Image (cartoon, rainbow, N blue to C red; front, side, top):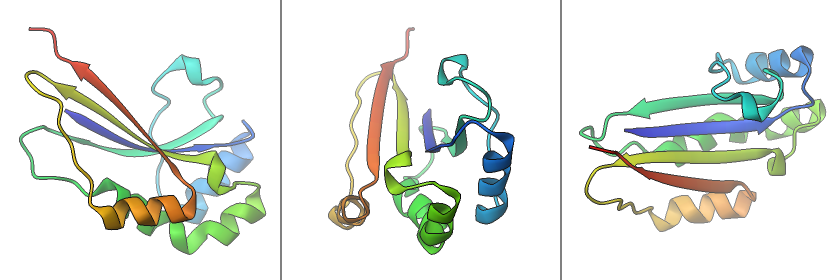
Length: 123
């Protein structure tokens, strides 16, 4: 499985969390982990993709969601360094991935981080 996540760090209030949801016109995911603090401290949107499915271009999908709203997000107090894309990758035999240079350039020019965690599935 591949878990693609768009995380936005908030001020921890429901008001900001709700404002992000309304601004992006998206329903966030439920909090996945108590370690992230209050349920309103990180706004998360994502997709889970079975390893057998075709490549999912999550970087461009997430950037297409965010780019039209950067100035409005800044008015809420959300800046690009509050945003991170996260890929969690479960594998059985090999963990291999590649990204197109255009995606990486677009992500880098906007100053948004990309985290990747790989986990070997225990048989």
